Image (tube, rainbow, N blue to C red; front, side, top):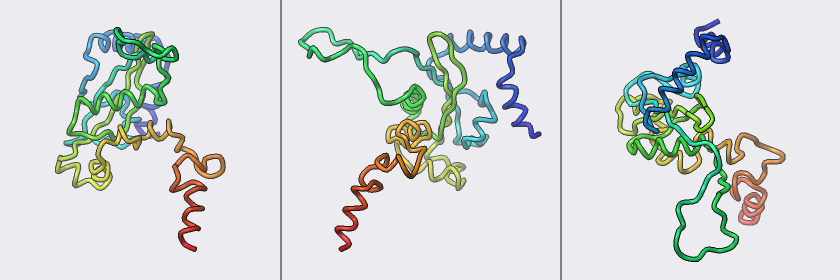
Length: 196
């Protein structure tokens, strides 16, 4: 087995030593800022599978997101509709929120991908891989240059977590209307009419 397979297997290990390690990590992470840049990934196997490379212009950020319901901002004062609720039902998961918040803290970077790290009763932690758009090392890498050229990937639903939330992991029967008019049956019928 390669080294990354051993790392992946140790991630699911529930020995007393690993439990003590994660307990100490969570105690430390709770005291850290919400957005924390780290020197190397906690899950090296997962990060490399998603495109992380240890080179200039590629950084990793640990992002903390609150668990629980999504609530609206303070609406004190004024009249509100009786149908308006204090809690919100968002169409995106916490991983997408973590990617966007990490991107807000690093404006010159684009989100490559992200992965789950840990959770407790109040928070969830994700590590977000970011790519510097202007780094010569990134622009010289064929695998990263295309990502660096896409602006606002996290906000346009182009990351892996966003595509999963949009239902783009499936193709074919049952997913005809996932990709909009250009790919759906309406787009095909319009193309037939235009082509004669």
